[in-house]
Length: 123
Image (cartoon, rainbow, N blue to C red; front, side):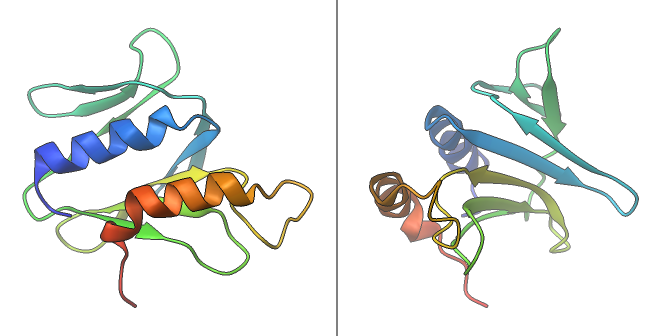
């Protein structure tokens, strides 16, 4: 998915599922934030979470893409990639990793897959 408004709507839907983690990576750090629920579009940056509380700022530029992935031994995720293909952030859905049977929720996994399978990435 590449349209900015569509990506914002998908991110808002994703965070609305609850039990999500937003993971942001750089070459020297990884941040994982739990419990963000809101999406707000600013002039240049998109804010996940509330100002004054834990939040993440994202810069979604022309050419950015949002993809859904469900890989073996990992939670389902939406991945935001920049125009150059670099992974900017990942929204993971806890409880969707089949390899962790004690936490796996087949109903949750099915709902998330149904909601986002149209964004599935192709390797």
